[in-house]
Image 1: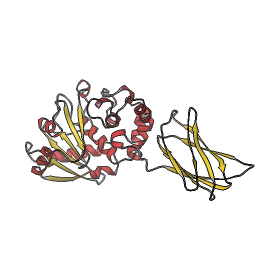
Image 2 (image 1 turned 90 degrees about the vertical axis):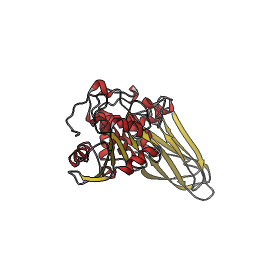
Image 3 (image 1 turned 180 degrees about the vertical axis):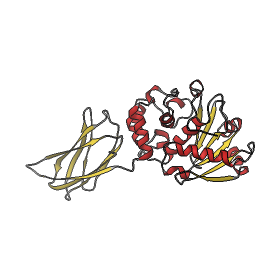
Image 4 (image 1 turned 90 degrees about the horizontal axis):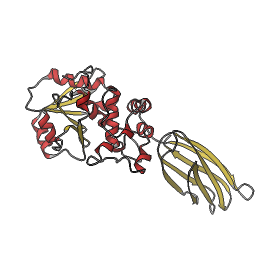
Amino acid sequence: MPSADTPVVASAVEHMRDAVIQGKAPPAARVALARAPARTYTTVDGYRVEIESSASYAVDPAADQGVVDFLASRVHGPELADLRVYVGTPPEIRRLCGGHPRVVACYSIADGRMFVPGEAVAGIPVEYPITHEYGHHVASWRSNNPWFALDWGAKYWSSAMRVCTLVQRGLLFPGNQGRHYREDPGEGFADGYAHLHYPDAPWYFSELMRPGAAELAAIRRDVLEPWTGPRSRTFRGRLGPRKTTRRFSIRMKLDGNLTVRLAAPGGAAYEVEAQTAGFAAGRTLRPGGQFGIEWCRREPVERVTLTVRRRKGSGPFALRVRWPG
């Protein structure tokens, strides 16, 4: 039965591998699920979690409740109520998760279900893969627009880890469960979540994603106070022959899309530019025009200057800006 106090065997955990299943679970997994009656248990904070166990194990409500109680001991939000768990023997889990000889557990996106072993695997306590897979489940219920949080990690962690920049540099590979498994930020987030609970466990993934205090705090925030969407602000001004330029500024603390939309008099054409140290992007817009930038910060907090220049026409304008925060 899982326990929140079970120590992690450092020499074993570094060999753990898991899988994220895109789309429906494999046929073998669906067959196994069809043969395993579902039982629902309630956590101490009122969430109901569905458990299915392999026919290789005797029905054991106490053990099932132990799994649910353990999950409730992990840092979580209401996404716990949308989780399903299949518990199988290690060889069965390896087969259901795709057959890789070192796979210990997996997570099915479409089903919101983790497939986990009911006993230790090669010295790895069951608590660790359960915690890691729950990290994937958290990501599946978080937004990191314009990116997929399951592949890139949730918004606050992804921004703190500078995933966007590292992907641009060809150092991380979102959603890559093959050759670049260790450089997959989706896995980095899930194992960072596990390290939130087991900080002394060894780090198996790219050193670029090894979590420090700030990154662990970002994961906790992703779980407990998830990002809900971009900020928005409208800047207003007037341009004409005497006043041809107006400037405004915002502070970027997160990576994501920066979008601007211009409202201006008919016949006007105003150039709008977003600029920070070492980077600028802009476009000449007519009334109702807009453009967006996939913004990867170069500093933890960036001051972005928004410049509106008169190219044609004159009169008042409203510049609506949306950015991740």
